Image (tube, rainbow, N blue to C red):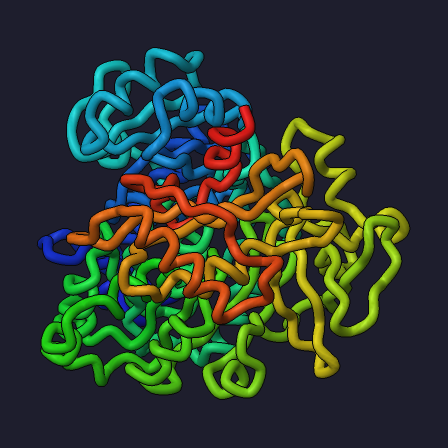
Length: 509
């Protein structure tokens, strides 16, 4: 389903709420405004398979643009609003977008991008004027009648660039109308997480990211309400859960860590009893963090593992995780396979590259056939990987180790940084941590921990040694960091992903 269905049955129900503001969209408004924008884009010359680029912060209009593209057979490319103007312009140009829609709240970023990209068939700005852009509000007010044909569009997002320059991830367009069933994530949300039209879904991450955009759309398909937060703050999130009677939400593990580090009197101040589903994904969650979250909130913690490429998805609930600690669950769409560098399927317990099986090629990298080819299994082209490493246990549960490019090889032995990061994550002196391999003349690489300290903690050689000893007590000695560096802040994307490639480059360039 899509908003038009709910606009007919529950027109005044809230589809979107921007937390701590008076900005909302009912289903009738979401349907009317997205249909008007679809007409505007059509009249500007966009046709099935064309791209709409969206540059925005967390604003309700993001979902108008999302649904306008999806009901027009268009691709929507939401661009990271924390990039530089040159980086945004690269994505807009590389995607071949024929329409560029921006939020005036981004100020000079939106204007600068407008100067750097070629003329588009449509340039629209909402929330205020932006030089070089037409008024979004005026365009919608002057839109013609609704389009009769509504083929289903799709999302084409760009990788976050944690291991290189961003690449567009282009799925095939669905062979159906937008109001026909068939969206896999909607079925996962409905049948695996039990989400329906009574749910109020909390989304504090940036809307340009894959999960907030896709999951917000899935909630609308099911008739629920999406509560957008402008940004994440640990205590504010607890207040929002109480204030809006949040029943479901999604966060990343760094958000869990920050909530767990709140004083006990703050954590117990708010009524969180409405919450029945709290999903996490996007980055590995240290087992101690997850165990603490389940102990605090109860068995409402759910996890899935997927990627921007959306080539596969696993699922696990709280009880399954307690029975299989550290797992990200079982594959729920196509089988998962663990393979060595030659493509040979490995036995349970052996670490290798994670492939998901499909009956078709689920995505291509836009303008990069070579990268698309490297993501495919050498013998089974519809088995694809994003380069993550892991293993399956005897029951078919998947465990992640790390990305292949971040594996540390010391003295010929593979060391997976995530295991050491998990150990350090809950040390009281550690606010954030990354473990990387740095050059070593004898061993090839040695293990280094790069630590962002908790507020009020002072770095010292003694603290570095304490952290090394802390790890040594908990993992095999060959995995223990040889050194610890302290930094003011680790490079993370706003969605919580560690930009480890940038960090490694500082030590190897």
